[in-house]
Image (tube, rainbow, N blue to C red; front, side):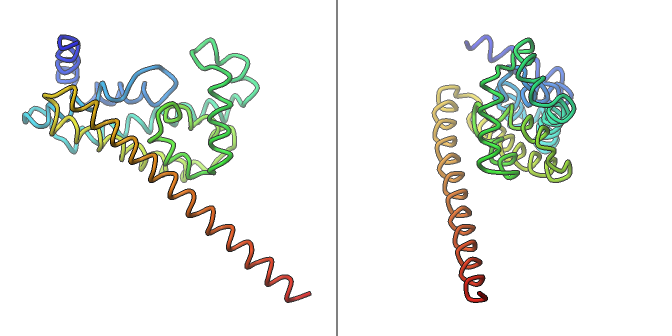
Length: 209
């Protein structure tokens, strides 16, 4: 495993920011490529002064946005029936499309931001956004913000703990747990807020009758 990590670090270092962009593009589309492989080594190289961490961040976040736009266009142009029928030939299972559709339907456009932080959802949340014809500007902003948060987390881990693989995995689990709790809390808050707003609206209507 140590040899594989060294090879990845060397590959990212050799390909530079273009390599980060390509790797994150693949991760953000439906290709099975983990973002940790690109961004954590980039953070480690930045800690050694071999990369600029700001440039690495924009390369990673930009690649993620480009991959997400690729999926968005697929959903927008091809539609749900096509993806359900033929997606399996490009490693996109029907149940994956259905799971991300349910996530998008439940949490709305903001799910393109928070979904970027949820494993198993992150790569595919762009598909239902495209199928549902979410406005492109809003989609791009939400996606870049979500991808930016995730890239910053991974770069930070690589920068401060790049020499300790076990510690990185441990911290990543804690970070994902915290992110999950925050996401649930935010959605719960907004659902309650919207519910109260609906109740007040109904009360006002009743007073007018």
